[in-house]
Amino acid sequence: MNFVLYTVTNQIAYITLNRGEKRNALSPELVTELKYAFTAAEQDNHVKVIVLKANGESFCAGADLGYLQQLQHFSFEENLADSHHLKELFLKIYTLKKVVIAQVQGHALAGGCGLATICDFTFSAPEAKFGYTEVRIGFIPALVSVFLIRKIGEQKARHLLLTGEIIKAEAALAYGMITEVVLASELENRVNQFAETLIKQNSTQSMQLTKHLLHEVQNVALNEALNVAAHQNAKARATDDCKKGIASFLNKQEIKW
Image (cartoon, rainbow, N blue to C red):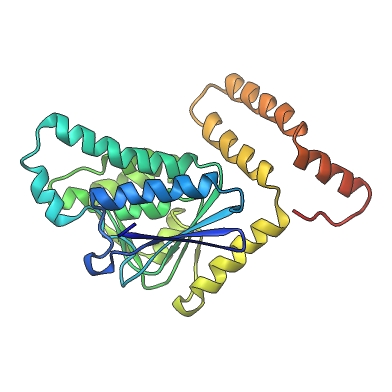
């Protein structure tokens, strides 16, 4: 891969945007490589948690400007195919079986802001700024809007998406867009510490089933959501991890995942 680095250490897969000279802008090639890397991490039995991070000053500046110029000459069908390409990446990350943690060291704007905030957890340096700036260049925050409304609610999403306001990390934390703001010098260690805690304390199967449950119950009627939850509850009880966890708890033994 040319634009993404992929490594695995201690059950953590590190997916690194490596197009720093272009502020890690989302070109079609970068999106393709990200999809490949997340698929590889999901299928790797040695990986329990995934960290998405970036090299360079910016986390991700959104769409590649050079590519945006090319889009002006695309047909509707070509633009639709390109939109589906990015949609598939966002959906893959959002529905991935394994926990994804974003490590945001620099600005995350437009589609890059979406990339940072659709992860399960997002840790940011104080210097990083966030914003959905599409309306400022005559574009719309189409794909990211679907996920942002789910994450922070319609009222807050309306403000961010309609104003295109660029906000500081602390404001993003207050909005509920990110998990924690950490000094830049401590960011990598904090993310690794958090990932290692999940690996040590939590069942892999339980985290996968919980992620699936959260995805399934949000947009269905109450009774249907409860039926889905009951089904997942029964399914979880039959897993090896559940049997192991309950046995260890009852025998007052430390659970080693």
